Amino acid sequence: MTDRLGMQLTQEDIQEFKQIYESEFGEVLSYAEAEECAQRLLSLYELLASDSESKPEMGVVLYNGNDVEKPSTRSSKTESNN
Image 1 (spheres, rainbow, N blue to C red):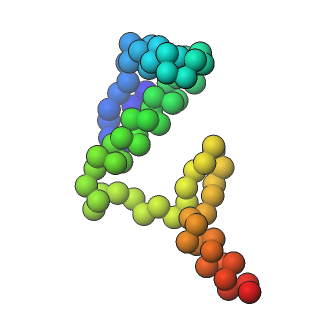
Image 2: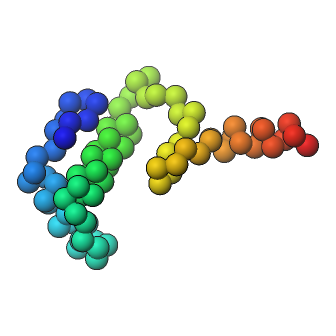
């Protein structure tokens, strides 16, 4: 699997991630689950490691696959309704 910056995880990388995840959390992931989690972790690391000018504007945050508005956006809507 390749992420947006072209870094590719090998099968060996994913197997290693599965082993680490199991030893840390006591939960066995399927290959597909481990691949998705490892890729998300790599993407997060790349985002945090990139310079601030190349970071995307974060208007929506994904939480467990569901779109959630930024707290500041949500609170301003609540305030305007009062």
